[in-house]
Image (cartoon, rainbow, N blue to C red; front, side, top):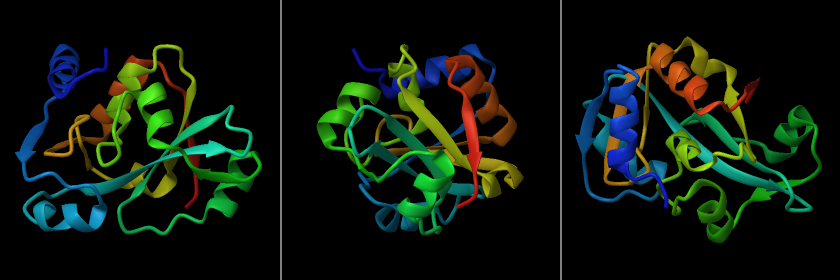
Length: 163
C-alpha cells in the first residue's frame, strides 16, 4: 500500500515537523504549479524520477524548479551511464507515486532503499522548501532543516550534486 498524503502528514507530525499546507487544483508540471506558488515564500522544487540505461538503478533528483537538468552531466556526477526518465510503472513500483505527484515523500514507500536520492547543492541554502505530499493537489512548505530530518527518518542516503 502506498503512503497517502495523510500518511505524509502523520509522519511529519510524528517527527514534530511543522508544515504549511496549500490546496490547489491538480498540477502535473512545474509550469502548472507556478501559478499556485505565488503566495508561498519558499524554494520550489522539481523532482525527477530517473533510471539508468540497464533499468536496474533508479534515482530521485531534487532540484530548484527553474533549473534545467542536463541528464548527461548528471550521469557523470552520479557515476552512471546514460540516464532517462523512468516509466510511470517504475515510478509506481518504486515510490508508489503517479506522474505529477513525484516527491521525496514517496520515499516512505521505498522501505528497501532501492531509490538513490540526489539533491542539488543550491537547495541547501534554502530556508524553506516545498513539495507535494504524494498528491498533486496539495503543496507543503517546511523548513529545509526539517526536510533533512524527514530524509534521515526514511533512512535514504542523500548525495549532493551540482545542477
